Amino acid sequence: MSIYKTNMNKLLKELEEKKVDPDCLVSSNANETTKKLFEYMKSIYGKNILSGQQYLQPSELEDAVYYRITNRLPAVRGYDFMDIDKKLKQPQTDRAIYWAKNSGCIITMCWHWYAPDNINDTANCDWAFYYKTTNYDRKTSFDIIKAVEEGTAEYKFAVEEIDKVASELKRFEAEDIPVLWRPLHEADGNWFWWGNRKNDGGESVRAYKKLWYIIFDRLENYHRLTNLIWVWNGQSREMAVNPNTFDFCGEDIYSELPLDHSSQKERYLDVTSYTYGKRAALSECGYMPDPENLKKDNVKWLWWLPWWGGFVYKRDEHYRPVFDKNGLPLHNPEKFSESELKSFFENDYCLTLDKLPWYSEKNAEFVKGIMKERFGL
Image (cartoon, rainbow, N blue to C red; front, side, top):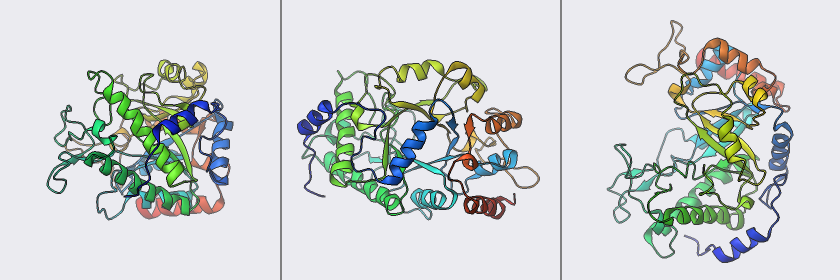
């Protein structure tokens, strides 16, 4: 591990002295491609919303649902760095780069950060991102307080993992691909090990913010990455970090109401009330908002991102996809109807992949080819 260490006092002083400007990227390293994407996203804010989708399984059956019903694909594709410690046959970074290079899509990356349940026996313990207070079978007692304390085994582990993610982000950088980078998401919840413990006198909140600053400093000032657009997704005023460390803010909303295609206006107004003019995204969602509701309520989410799997396609009682007679996955009618999806994607307010200004004939040929190859569409 590098001897580089974050000088927290110096970093925070610099951040506090810097003027907050939502119209400028927080990274002083940003390359031209990253700047152009940021400028484009600024230009559509309040005028359009980018459709998106989160993926996990290599089959990416979500695409078959979208393309079969609308003949279009989402503009933003979401992937995850959760597999940096696993030897998968098809790591998500590979797929994200493949799609960005060939389709012209916008990439967003999150990080379900696996940590060992026993830092003293990492080879033989469970690894998880869910914290020990949850009901999940696999969970971790990894201590965020120790993770930001120099000299601890947890700190050493955390920095090494940040450097692994930096190596993955450099792969995007080498291909000139900007990344909407969303680490430490949903921090105000207590389900992830980096979350708010709620009853510890604010100790976990302070540790979360310190960990965010370590990630920011290490990627910006040590690795000096040039392709990052930072997305903060802490989800409460209490968890808010310095606005000079993020470009967009995000809210993850999983409504318990049936077929809730509302604008989620209250959450939008809340997050934009304390983020210093930073533009907001629906960084995860269970339901796509109806573009007409967004226009009516003047809610300016920059993109939406339904979660993978059952949030798009129908699954049986064993969580297996349900297919039609042609072998194509059926949409999940509990999330949207075919007519709703068509109306959303055809609405001028909603930007699908083919509506991006740089979408080319070459991109279109790739999409047509891969949809035919994978799904016979």
